[in-house]
Image 1 (tube, rainbow, N blue to C red):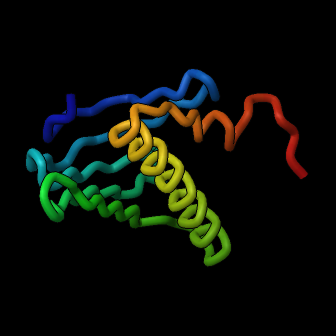
Image 2 (image 1 turned 90 degrees about the horizontal axis):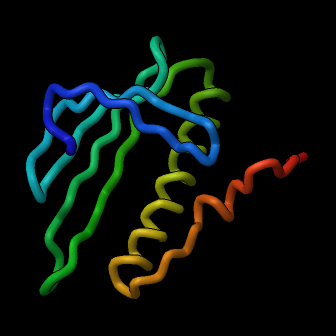
Image 3 (image 1 turned 180 degrees about the horizontal axis):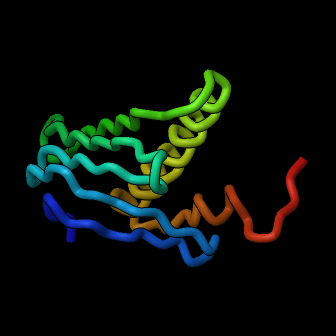
Length: 115
């Protein structure tokens, strides 16, 4: 459960990856603000939930505070955008159609060597 002031560790077992998460603010059904990353390279992630039409919600995600030279900042920002896009697409399919796309696992198959 996300609660302001809590420190969490999120783990993606399929990739053997964990990340520190500090929950900064939670406004139920409105906004979530966290900082996540590794020591010395934390970034802020803010989710804003906006009611839209009858029973839908528009979700905006902003990930900010990337560090490094220009090339590294651009790479990290694009990686973040891509990851959140996959997650939101999968969540939309699940919530609206009860489909599990496995989009993240399919996009980043374990053991695949890329050029």
